[in-house]
Length: 213
Image 1 (cartoon, rainbow, N blue to C red):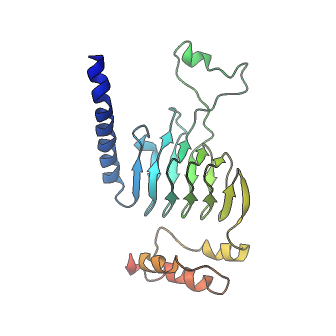
Image 2: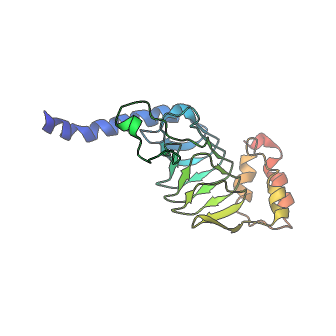
Image 3: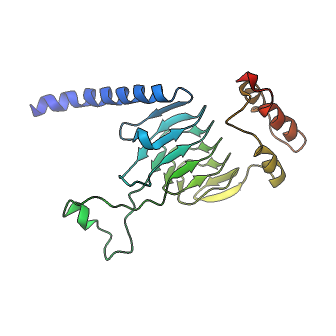
């Protein structure tokens, strides 16, 4: 019996993963994401156009939630840790009540993870609970994010390296409404390098005449 279980276990796991992804895709036809089997679908929200695989680790806290905006890019092996931190103010780090006496796990959650529109998260990054990734920011491969990242910042090596644009350009780009965007013009102008000379025209074209959706 144990031999049969070991033979069929990988097939059962693959079937369950495919079944969950089919259910997820039915709920998320407005984006291009897939979801891991252990990720809780009921506390994850994803906006339009976002792509990538969602691997969310949850621990049962009511505060745990993952909100992902529109047109985000999520690379492979990204982990969203929604809670599960140990309470370091206790006498020991070890969770005695949960593991020794089988009481309900009370891992610390610092709040929802909020990812705003147009964020790019690089390969193997880890995003911890309570963090907000501002619009248009970039998270470098392998980064561990424990604090908020401002809009249009480039974050790597666990620190902000620089901002993608000047403050003046960033203020103008924030006027783009990614909930109501002209998709045809977005595809066209997303290939342009933004300068102070062309930013107004790009912003206007992306949000004007939304019949292109």
